[in-house]
Image 1 (cartoon, rainbow, N blue to C red):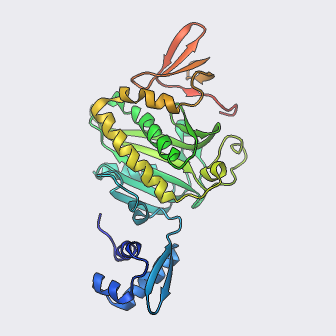
Image 2 (image 1 turned 120 degrees about the vertical axis):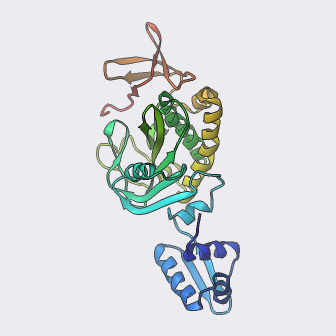
Length: 323
C-alpha cells in the first residue's frame, strides 16, 4: 500500500517519542515548512501532536479514526485490508464495495466509513448508525467455491467477529445466522451479498456493522440494541477493532477454502446464543419452536421439535416481538 506524505509522517512519529522537523524534512525530502503544514492538517483530522522547539514533534494520541493508516498499524494480514477506501459519510459501504467488485478491485478490498446514512441489515431492515460512534465496513472477497456455499461466509465472518470481540473481553455470542449479541442484545450484524457470472461466484461482499460508542438508540430498538461501550464500560479504538477482525477472518477464510465449513461446526456452537435452549424460528412458510441443537457441516440450523429434528437452511430466529 503506497503511503501519502502525511501517512509517512505518522509512521515515523510512531517509531520515536520525538522527531525533529529537520529530520522529517530530510527523510521525506520536503521542506520544514511543508512538514509544519502537514502537522497542522493531521491535528485538524484528529491526531494529537505536540511540538517543542528543541525536540520537534511528538504523537500523543491518534484519536479514534477509521482512516487506512489508522487501521494498517494493527494489521498482520497478507491480503485482506491491504487496499482500504475510507469515507467520512456514505449511504452504504455495500454499494461502494459492489462497484469496486465490478471494477475488478483486488480481493481483500475494504470500504469503511464514519457515518453510514442508509445502512441495510438482513431482510431489508435499516441498520442504525451514528456519526463516529460505530463501524460500518464492507469486505470484498473472491472465493473459488460452488455458489451454494457462499452463504457460509456469513457464519465464518460471525465466528471471526465474535472471536475478535472476545479478545477485548466482551462476552459476545452468535444468534444464527448473522447477529452478534451481548447479554441478549444486538451489538453487530453481518450482511453477505454475492455477485455471479454465469454459473460461478464473481465476488462476495461481506458487510458488517458494529455498535461501538453508542450510548443511546432510537425508539423501537433501544430494548434490543447495545454497544461495546455500554456493555464493557471501557473505550475502544475502532481501527483496532477492524484490524483485529481482518486478522482473524483471513485465517478462518483460508481454513474455509481449504477444509470447508465442517471444520467450523464446533467453534460456532461454542459461541452460539441459546444453544440447547428453546427457540422460535420463522421461515416464509411457517413458524416452528423447539430446542436449538446447533448447526451441521453446511451451516444449516438444527432444531428439535415435537416431531423430531428439523433442519432449516434459510430462516430467522425470533428473539424480539417487533421482528
